Image (cartoon, rainbow, N blue to C red; front, side):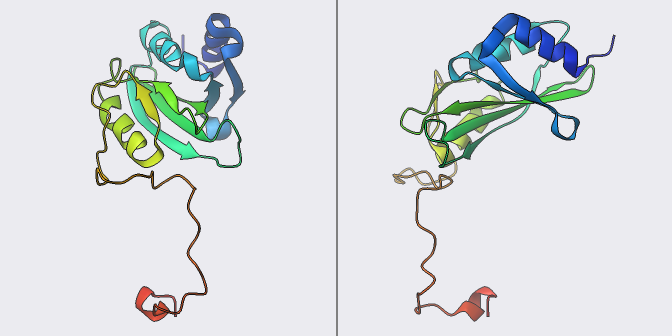
Amino acid sequence: MALTQEHIQQRLTEKFGDFVSNFESPYGLLSFEVAKDQNLKVLQFLFQEADLNFQFLTDLTGVNYPANIGRELAVVYHLHNLRDNVRIRFTVYADILSPDVFTASKLFSAANWMERETYDFFGVNFVGHNNLKRILNADEMDYFPLRKEYPLEDQTRIDKDDEMFGRG
């Protein structure tokens, strides 16, 4: 039997109820939302269930939505079932004041560096990660550069030559 999006959604809804929501299928990719405190349980379920078999973490990244008060930071997981060649995506939202999300690095070794990068650029604290420190930016940085918290460039500046930057 081929693994269908309907089957995946049914299994997740049976197991987690209201903790999984907002199922949609943009461009044929099953996408849904998971409650922040359930991310690791959902990952384990998707990994361990023989009929689901999502054992490959393709990507893990962050997104900053500053207008979504209480849900400013998103952690996005892309999983792949290699046997049936099925991909899914799910998102976990966190408050920017308490950006704690459980680590997936014990389940997927590839999550180690992906979580470090997401911490480095977005400030998501992956609870239980054994080496959560900056990976690409300088250790001295006291901000997270991909958060949309800084003002845009001052367009009235006259101390630079736009032609040098290909804008003239």
